[in-house]
Structure formats: structure tokens, C-alpha cells
Length: 323
Image (cartoon, rainbow, N blue to C red; front, side):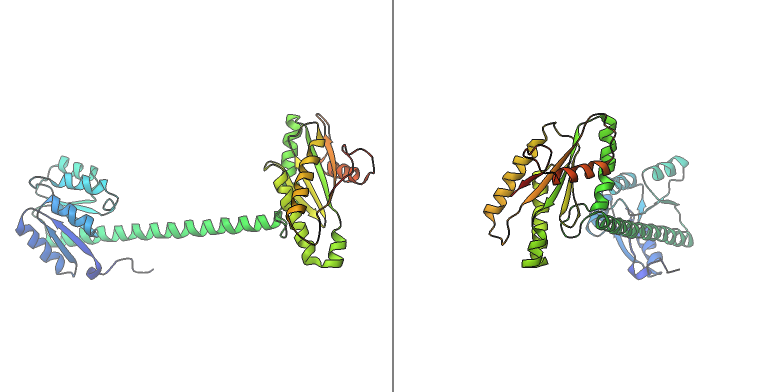
């Protein structure tokens, strides 16, 4: 196990006592072990010194004029800069109530005057070791929290990769069924009218054959972005594969024709604003899920796909081409 204890020459100790002889004696004891010692003759000087350069440990007398050790301790513990500094009270007060008050205010230890050199050294060393062990534990916890955060981030990325289409950023087939099935159960339980749109991107094969797959991929990305812009965040938009897209609208009106003008407007705007070697055009089929209707999500997709390919003079919930 690594040595947790800082060397004495790296350890800064602040001694606070209004009696100069006590300061000199304590300083001599601790300096003999190599500790860096700073001295304050009163509470106000001690608070200034502690805030200016926080020590590793404070030895604090209780009976001092103007501001006693208890008051100094309270102010140290009230500051974020100094609240973690361990405090050892050193006092001629030997009553149990004095010691209890010292610990209640946040003191870590208590040495009674007249003190013994060996006792002072051992209690000082123990408090320094406890502080450093505590600090190491905090650092270990921080590292652990960071590692957990990174692992969760990595797991999220993996999950997103497994549920999203790498090219378009939409949900893939797996992601769609995972999310849509959950939403579909809610729809069926609450008997909310919903609908599913099956979208086919027209002309993708011809674009791939004539202009190359890079342009075809750009066409797929543009279609995905257009669908995301057209539908709400609560709607589940996915690319099933190839040129096929699907959208589950969990809450919609019974007037399914409302989708067509919105889509047509966005497609027209896209084709007018972009001078690409292709024009976006899609075929669309809409399948309704009526209240109390016992139908699976797979069946709804199959129905929407079929409706898209049925030729009819009416747009309704049948085949409808937008270009």
C-alpha cells in the first residue's frame, strides 16, 4: 500500500495561542520533527492566516482575549476555504463540558495543558493521517464517479449506435420497434387514436446508379431531416432500411389527410431552396389505429406499406406521392 502520509517538510501547521511561551514551546516540539510552523497570537490573526494560506492542521487555544478558540473554530468551520482543516484544541480547561463543546463545534481532538511532548506529536500525526486518508478517499470517489460517468456515457453511445441509423441519425428498425412498441401499448391501453405513416423515398436506386451512392446517401439524410422537421418530437421517426421510413404518431386526429400538405410544403421549400442534382419525392401510406382495435405494430406497418402501393384516385389513406 502506498504511503499516504505527507512528509513533515511538506506539512504546514498553524498554532494559535495568546501566550508567547506556549507558542514557542509548541513550535519547538513540532519543528524538531520537520513540520513547517506558523504562529498567531490571537483569533483574528489566525483567521486571516488560515484564509490566506490554509494550513494542514490548526492547534487552537481556547482562552484568548477578544475572540476565544470556540469562536475561531466556528468561523473556520463556516468558511468553505477552511471548513475541512482539522483542529486540535489545546487548553488548560479540563472539564468534560469544555471538551464536549469543543467537539460539538467541529474540533477533531483535545489536548489538556500542561501537555506532554509525545502526546502532542502523536495526536498531531494521527490527525494529519486521518485528513490525508479522507482526502485520498475523496479523490478515489471522484475518480470512481468519473469512471462511472464515462462508462454510462459509453453505454449510452453503444445503445444509441444499436438503436439509431448511422447514416441519418434516425432510429433504425430495432430502435423503432423498441420505442414504438412501448408507445403502442400505451396507446392501446388509453384508447387514443393513432396512426402510422410508411414513407418510401422515390428514385433512390436511379440516383445511386447514375450519380453514385454518396449522392444517394445525401438524399437519404435530407429526407430524414425533412421528416424530423415535419413531425413533432413526440412522434417516432425511423429509417427501416434502404429507402423506407416509418413514423408512429401516437396522438393524431382522425383527419389523416393533414399530413400531406405539411409534407408537401416542406418538400417544395427544400426543392426550391437547394440546387441539388436531385429533387426529393416520396410516396406515403397512412394506416389508422382506431379505438379498441386489437392490432399489432407489425400489422400496422404492413397495412401502411400495402396502402402506399395501392393505386387510387383519392389521396386519403392510400398511396400518395409528394414531389
